[in-house]
Amino acid sequence: MNVARYHEIGLGEVAAKVAGGARLSASDGELLLTTPHLAAVGALANQVRERKHGDRTYFIVNRHINYTNICVNRCRFCAFSRPAGHPEGYLLSVDECVEMAAGFRGGRVSEFHIVGGCHPDLRLDYYTDLLAALRARFPDVHLQAFTAVEVAHMARVEGISVEECLTRLRDAGLGSLPGGGAEVFSPRVRAELCPQKLPGDDWLEVARTAHRLGIRTNCTMLYGHIETPAEVVDHLLRLRELQDETGGFLAFIPLAFHPENTSLEGELPGPTAWDNLRMIAVSRLLLDNIPHIKVFWIMVGLKVAEVALSFGADDVDGTVVEEKITHSAGARTPEGLTIPQIEELIARAGRTPVERDTLYRVVRAEESA
Ligand code: V47
Ligand code: SF4
Image 1 (cartoon, rainbow, N blue to C red):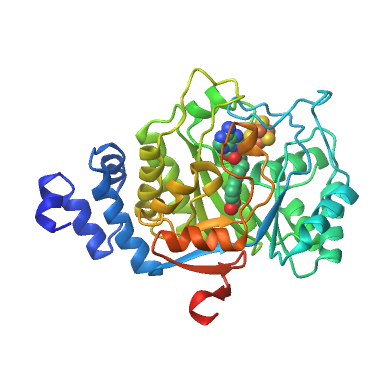
Image 2 (cartoon, helix red, strand yellow):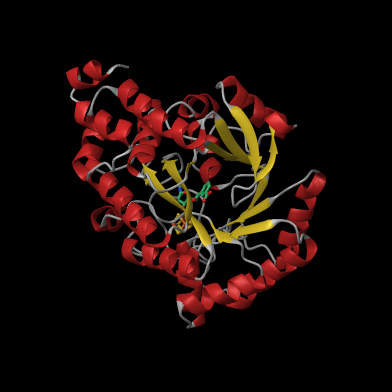
């Protein structure tokens, strides 16, 4: 798309900033979220994506372990959790988690992604025993475990600071934190959808503390519900500010809301493919200091994931195998992909698959295979 065309559709100033590598403002962000010219927004994001990563598209061989669905929070958008005492509530013992992980070990795995609800009674020993047992059994597998929300919850139950809690988790084997629980930082959205959840400021503070301790983390935003463009921009810019301060975020993952089986089913339809592509593109453009934008294929579907690789995304997450959070909420995607399937998805989109580890070190690239 040429410069004159960007001017014609009102994106001339933003296009000039993107071409010159200048930082975009909040009002640029709102413009990108509201312009009808999605293809232009995608083309701008693709410029940044290719400048940073060329054709390279990352994936990881990982497995998800959801140790409990029992949660004190009861977020309105969640179909996964159950209150304590509910017949469908479950809590896996440490041995059961290790057994599950061992069952996954048919092939090579480089990461276990471990998240669950905020269980009312579990003490810190459970979490540290779980990490230590997995580390002892699978010393070469990175443990990406517990969102900032879970960490703050376990620190509160244990009566210790978040710093102390993270230190003990790290000493037991924690490698990094996944990015969940951020939702939208806006107090209005949180009051409406997840009033009991950790406030946005506190989520950022847990991430700040983790980064100070040398623990890398991801970050996310749940979109496609009641958020406004201004609230999306505010969320992204607060992440960008923290990244300027710490440099600790590895990747940003926009999470597409799935309404089925939640209390919002029938009230909200969830995002369209158009919304999904726009959110990938806008996050690539605003988050100039976060290295990777991940399209979580489980949430947006395989076809949108392919297109997203030309709208700013450079990572498709992983093989996963068993996914409960989005599938409880009606996702129609498979629960996992094999390595050849994920490589094919990336190749079909005209990109080069690169298998990475959690910290984005290259495990295997097609060029060198
Ligand atoms: O924190 C809950 C969200 C998150 C729904 O860090 C929902 O690499 C959609 O954070 N529809 C968990 N989303 C998943 C997550 C994640 C996923 C993949 C990779 C990474 C990473 C992180 O899912 C929760 C919440 O924000 N969520 N319910 C729902 N109905
Ligand atoms: Fe609990 Fe997380 Fe579900 Fe909220 S989204 S109810 S914190 S499991």
